[in-house]
Length: 127
Image (cartoon, rainbow, N blue to C red):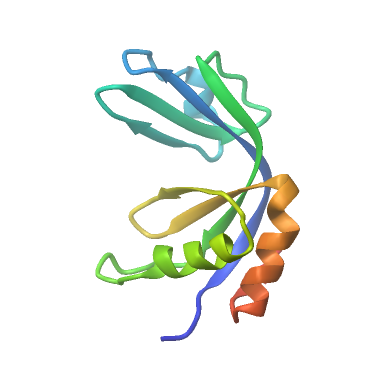
């Protein structure tokens, strides 16, 4: 199977943790791109850094590498293969998925190492 192409998004993102009963802020829903996950214990929101969210905890300055898709839900091992590339160069990731694809969030300070590792391993990264 050929290696995927990843697109680097220009936006810088912030990951927020909110109380699981918190309403989703309107500014999040108006953002051009956002990711929301909710469990019985937590509500997590990922938005561009310029979207202000009152949260219990947050971690800013992440960049998104989108695996260009659409990817079939039956495809196996994409996250594992990409995750191992990042692990080899000691780069932490935060992964979010949509129906069509996956997004790997990388701290901005680790971005060069991550992109270099991907290219060395045969992946194409567009900016």
